[in-house]
Length: 161
Image 1 (cartoon, rainbow, N blue to C red):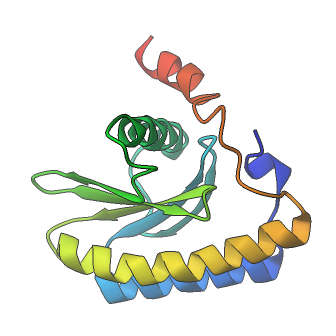
Image 2 (cartoon, rainbow, N blue to C red):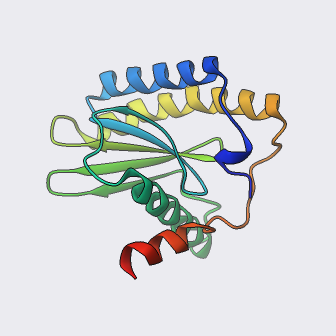
């Protein structure tokens, strides 16, 4: 499967991604935005630095998103374009970007899920364009469809084994 190791950002790509994420955080009042590729590699972090193991978090995020892709298929949906995990104090919003990357937004009571989703939709559209241009330029072709859990299972075993 083609993960982050098979493509790389130009400095301009990264600046665009960072600018879109910073604008999104400002507009939504969310705390942190992470980009994780579908193999579980952390691609970028903007906003308040996470106070947890971001490598393990990225692996679990990819596994979570992949599991939900399978659940969507079981109920007759092609995919779930976004997921929400709501907690008492902390919540997460996850959205697919260019079928290759997952936008993970961490937010608390300073904002609402509705605002995060509203501003997130626009951010995803902008990020889709950046990633699609980058993938076309580096010739990685269409997004891979198999092996979404590769590597994540090992990380989960390390965490809970």
